[in-house]
Length: 109
Image 1 (cartoon, rainbow, N blue to C red):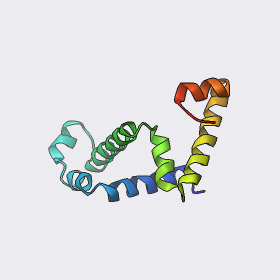
Image 2: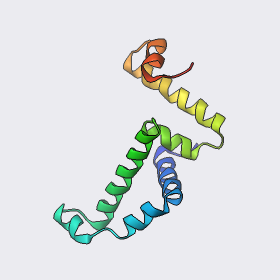
Image 3: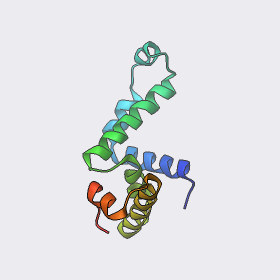
Image 4: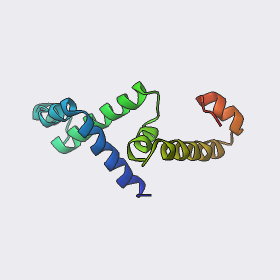
């Protein structure tokens, strides 16, 4: 599997490719808006892209990291397996019972 940063960058690229209207919007951001926020255009554009990505994940009922897995997994089965594995790690780090965690997040074990 690709390093996490590379995987996320690939997911962002695939997300942009699937949303040409968003790409068009990002390509025509007002430089004065970036300047008013004290940000470079590159940073300003990146922030807008990440906001759109987070909003899409939320619309789909996913965490952003789940959307990244979904967009980079080779198959839906790979996505499901990777997603479940990460959720198990999160539950373990949180010290939560796996069954309780699954109920909380609507996961099927």
